[in-house]
Image 1 (cartoon, rainbow, N blue to C red):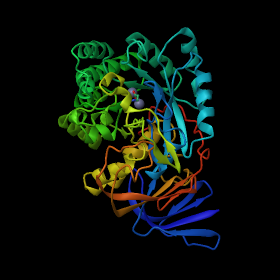
Image 2: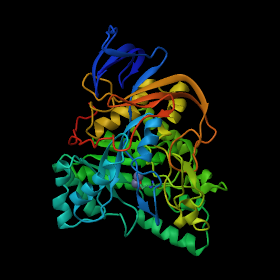
Image 3: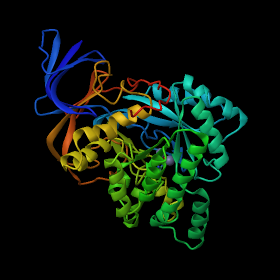
Image 4: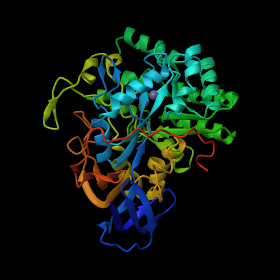
Length: 475
Ligand code: URP
Ligand code: ZN
Ligand code: ZN
């Protein structure tokens, strides 16, 4: 089956050009100024539209058990929401539920396989180190997993000690695996949370007050130094503090191979949002910071210090006692209400996988602050390059998967929970006025969103085995 998209403005990380794009079944086969239609082709007129590569969100948590509940999007609902927002590839995380890393991976693969509606991969969390785990890390590569995440926070739960992180980074380096870091200071957080509880400071803003940004800053510097000593690459997830960008820049200036990711919530909200009556909606870890931090994050994105924008999508209901209608059935999943009166019990995490591309397009491209190519670089191509999926994903090239988004730059709408398809009862961007929106989405050549209509199916998404880390991935 041949499909010709004519007269669209094709956007890659390098340029925007009016051109034609031909795809056959699941692959792009040709891009040229003028491709003549023939009668074997279905022709789509994309005049006035942008044609973007499907978005690549390398940081989502689907169906993740935590805080006595579970993140409210599973591998179907989360990937469906992703598609509506123009994202066609996501990377979720394998928890270290046992020390048999391969078993953990296969269990999650089985869980996702019948559900995912767009393509997906996994990172593996390393949250407990033993001789057996050290031996297992290289086996992840055969499973198609070439990135692992470590934590300097969540004492007695997910955190590794510095020496363990050093060991993990060396093993990762030797096997072409990229180490990712959750950067906060677990010891300081533990003390400050206990003090807040003792002083009965239990409202949501204390979540931010007990996780100071200096902890994130020193953790980025510490892990950068460890990566230098281990001679291993490093990727800092969910960067939120301006000082983290300073540390990242310092490390990069010293020749270290260190990449940074931020998320929309850190670009648009501050710790003051946690002080609102419904402040629990904004609780995630690390927390939001200040306007000064936002400005430095934007500066880092504009100047190539921070390479990607992902979401850390980990949604919960605001009030999980009240069902919402999801595909015709009532659904209620315990959420933020679990922590009413005690911020330490509020599930940490936010919705975002479907919001990312439309919100960022409006704020970056429609506003004139970033070019369409810069947008594609940060949301599609850099993530695919760093995580071993390029050029299959993240760009428009002959041979790439036909993951395509027809984007209408003139479409205006008021955004919010009624528009987004995330399976939760609220949206952080409620009432925001957007300019530019995805109207049709193809995943591997299959039209799965057409003018707001869902045509996708659970289980059609494929696991994408990823290539080992390439030190030259960003050229
Ligand atoms: O609050 C968040 N971000 N929950 C997800 C876990 C993590 O550390 O990314
Ligand atoms: Zn994290
Ligand atoms: Zn996360």
